[in-house]
Length: 426
Image 1: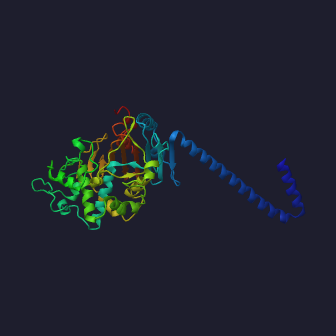
Image 2: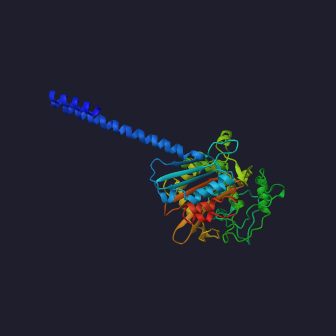
Image 3: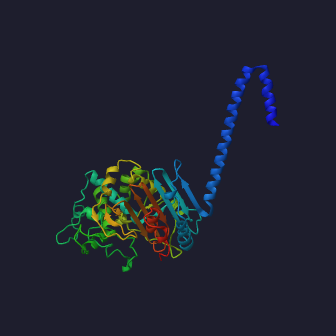
């Protein structure tokens, strides 16, 4: 009926003045097309809202970058991975996890679980997690940046930067260098023997300070000649962070902020959290299905594992490491990625292992992948990327690595092993 009325109206008007009719019809068509476009746009927006809301159901959320063209083979979570996350992380460990992907098309983030029992806010790309030893890559990037600026040299003996009265161990006259600390080839043990509270291994003394660090260093015997053998050492990287602090006369956290975080816009990456962040953005660590208190990493060895961060910030960090974001850190990052030594790095692929400054480099001699895992009581995390494929992954979990291993999950999501490797791991 409406169409007939419109037809009659236009027909009568054309009989009166065909020229006016032509102009009027043109304007009407424009208006009709404009109305149709608006209707389609509104419909599209409504569908988008419905999709966003449905994706957040059951505390599972997914965030896409605006310009993203989804690569289903990389950025979609395989069914077995979803099952692993829901079964082992959310239901069994009662923890939360955030998964972040990055490639040249942008980023994508999946989130599962809540902040804590007391705070049922779902975690997301801006939730702050303990990242443990991923901190070490910040420490070694600061070192690389200072090397590039001529402030220090990789082959400098560490005693050059320590107080004169500190006794530094040697191995048959061979001295430890900054490069040895950064590549875990110093011969130093995992931790100094005097760092444990009440001599209980695994129970960090939160009040461990430089005096105790120097005492522990003086009483340490090197297990191998510096530069010859890979031996993962929190003491070594922690000592490196302390040395860089002494050289620059800037607290370690501020040093990392000045040289890395501010450059990359990583505004939520920090050691010291304000109370509001602790309450609303910082989950509780978990072990054996229960919330636990995580020990504090002493300030004097903060460079070994004290930082906290978000998926968003670490995706920015990966974008710089992958060459997707270019900054004044480019040359320092290139230096940091250079292989310095071979290393025995256990991995389920049985890939050859090499050590760069802080990063582990795994390769089948066809494709290399740079990775670093982090773990502290009740938490574990992983970052990794394959430069030639331009793909990277961030995993942050408020779960213990003994219950849900983020490093192995990272290998799965980087397509280095099959998801079946996640099943029956305990």
